[in-house]
Image (tube, rainbow, N blue to C red; front, top):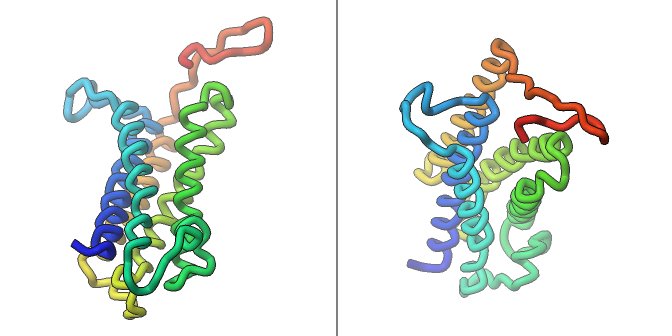
Length: 201
């Protein structure tokens, strides 16, 4: 396995896992209950959502590292961290870097959502949709062979990435249509000396 292959496989695994993460997030945002509905099992969606995010983030961080060991073109650490002047596809690689930094921001703000405040955090967490769009574009447009070959959207890896994007887009549309027809459960608010608090937090 060459460094090019390794960086491609790491990126592909990150895309698939992030897609699963987004789908789990959509289920949770629609208040899907796997105990009351299919598969009628006690499944901790929040735990799965968190761990898929952590593992996907780890894969995304590792994804460009093998490029440092490619003989040609030569990538430096700066080309990985700030790839605006990278030797190959600087725009697409910069898009990938922006996606990674947004993903890091999303994971960190999720860890500290209690300190941030749930309402502020929910607004920030909408960045997840931007992350999903950007990682699909980056994955589909990247030349994994690093030889200036034309984009081949019929390549198996590209087809898989694009399908992930289609599935996430369709699931997002279904989620918003569902919640429009079935208004979200409004948490009970308990008055406190400093305002109101969420009884379910």
